Amino acid sequence: MEKIEKDKILIQIGEKISEIRINKNMSLQDVSDICNFEKPNLVRIEKGRINFTIGTLVKIANALDIELKDLIH
Picture (cartoon, rainbow, N blue to C red):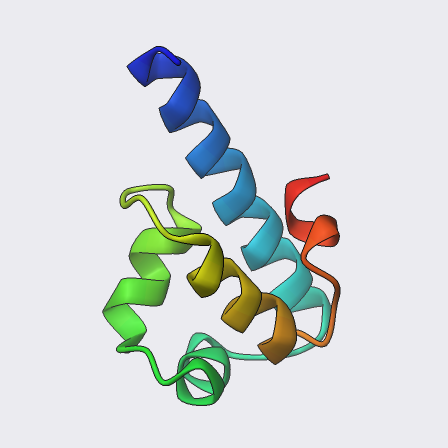
């Protein structure tokens, strides 16, 4: 997978996380606390600036009370 394509996917997933979080009236701190992440790390994930594991996505999906497929669909 080319770097540009990978970066685009990270940005799209990050935007989806942000959209769902906002629609559920959850703050960055709320989700960070539930996931046991530092808030700046969640910010970087939402902005597509860092790569993340499936395990991280599972934690975020659980914190948002959604299924993993909802983040990557």
